[in-house]
Image (cartoon, rainbow, N blue to C red; front, side, top):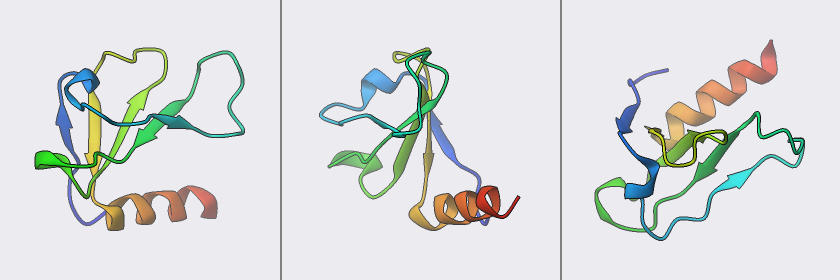
Length: 76
């Protein structure tokens, strides 16, 4: 990835976001969730959090960094 992700200490600081998880996810809550913050200092970034800890920290990625990461995961 070209840049290190930023993070926030609590994903509850991202007001007004809709957290989504993969349709491949099971009900076991063992996946990540993503959201697109609509406004504020995180607008334009992709937020990622652990579904087991919805109030926990979130990582913030630029669209390009996230695309590079997911492309590499699919390649493996």
